[in-house]
Image (cartoon, rainbow, N blue to C red; front, top):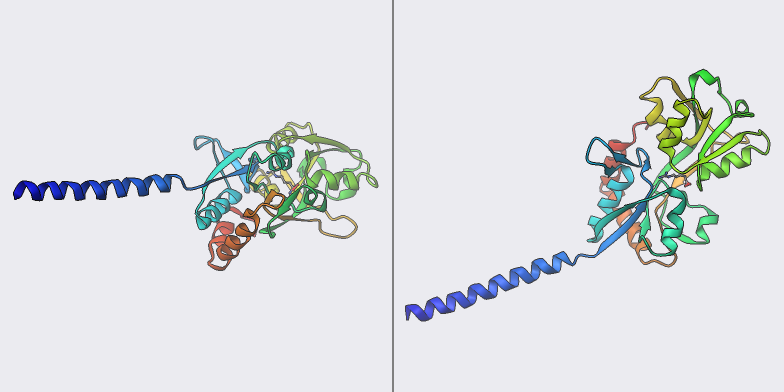
Length: 257
Ligand code: ARG
């Protein structure tokens, strides 16, 4: 009798164990979504060299929160900004968060989420150069990141204020080049520039006002055309805005509010 009972118990135990292991293997199968980014654009995304080269930033934390909301595992692929649209086209990544602006031109190739952060374009320069207005950029060496809305703006402005435009793959390397005196100014956005001007008092920034207007650079996430993820993303984003998560992340990362 005792033997019989222990056999029954053993069988029960086995059933429970196998149920546990099958449920853990199904959670291992949680779908992974791959995000493309260009980690040279703090505070949106950068490589934390002091912390095992982890990729960190506002976009990263927001992406993690969205993925969690949707029940996905998140994988991050770092690459140059100028190749991100192509990476979406060839489905190497499921979406992109890289401080990217929703433009009509890009819309021909990809879909965008709603705007999740509003930046605007600025000129980052060194105090010693005495560049204080857009007109002062005349004949100066001006750096822009390849394939960005900053490149588009610089080209447009240079029709009236001729400048020597240089394109760079990585924004952080461009800033180092300016520190070394190889560039006079850089077109970037308010928040990114603030990261440099707040730490190094030899840097300064001013708004890139063109035709009397602030040049907004509203940020969205990008998806392959007709990706179902775009609508899911917007829904999750809306929830994170409502429940205060997004504001918490803005306050954590964006200091020039
Ligand atoms: N906002 C600009 C654009 O869409 C520049 C973004 C650059 N982002 C980056 N991670 N380097 O074109």
